[in-house]
Amino acid sequence: MNCPNCNREFPDNMNIKIKFCPMCGSRLFEDGKEYVIQVECVGQRSMGEPNMMVFLDDRQLYEVQAGESICFAAKAGFHTIRFRQKVRNKSITLLVNSSYAIKAYFNSLSGLIETGITKYVDNTNEFKINTMSLTPPIMVVENDKAGFDTLLGNDGPDYEFRVSSGLKEGTLAIYGERCEFIADTSMIKEIVYYKNVVAVKKKMGSIDIQCDGNVHKVYSIPKDIYNEVLAFLSNRIEEVKNA
Image (cartoon, rainbow, N blue to C red; front, side):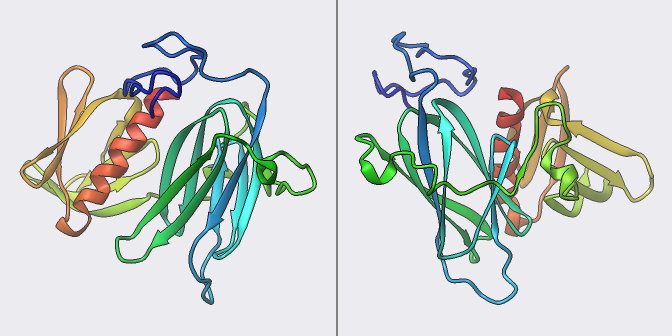
């Protein structure tokens, strides 16, 4: 993301709770103001195809069918919008100081959720808030309650596959906030929580997860999903550490 005033790119490790640009010092948004976020699920609906779930800050859940749109209001500031289709997730962080239109679709060829974002700087009439046109959420949770993954029974892994780690062969399960490795010769889980991860790097067909204390967890990843898994881990780790 870039500062809307000086157009310089925000640092990767920037605290998204701030209200002023760390480079130019200008205010990023007007407190208390609300804008409309429109999400269009692009594509054709087929029999048995699940709706796309849209999470706003993991507090409000919406659903949208292929070929349809939803609208919801968001207060000015930074927001995380997470899209889920089948077992695939994609999260984006937006600086909401204007209305947005987001086109999202599940790319069956890549197996990824892709998004296109349009910012409406002038906030024309079609994107002004009208409570009659806003889509009501199908579920809302408060800060002190369980997250959506628990409520929906979706605490299963986003990815699970066979890997090798050094001389060990086993199964790696990748979740939204951690990954778990179980070697074939042991029932003990090696758990890595993303909040303790310093960096994720490519390493000779494997992924090197560097943790606090200069601890490295290196796992081989199947070639067909290597880039997808690397992108998923990089994005989720950044989101967890910025939360």
